[in-house]
Length: 90
Image (cartoon, rainbow, N blue to C red; front, side, top):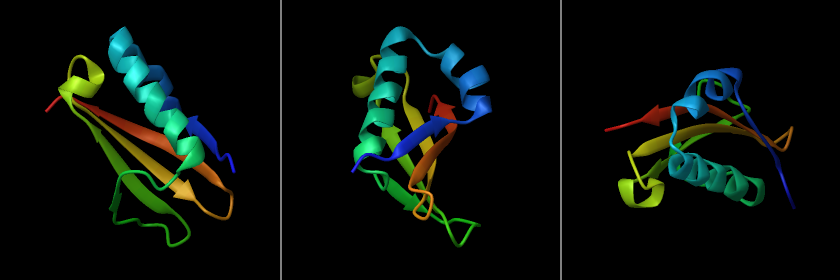
């Protein structure tokens, strides 16, 4: 099954534009992975009882640059994932 995955407005307008091409490819690979496995990464506490929050940590080797944490929320009922934040750097 393939799940819907989207970037939040803030990630599209601010986060992605700050990435180098290799960093953007690494984040894009995480997005592609989430289409098949929306529960990828380390689970985090969530304020929404109907959604699950996760974070995928990418190190400098994976990004070809800075470490990046990809925070995403999976909503099982909607079968959709929102990448809502990118933390760039240490």
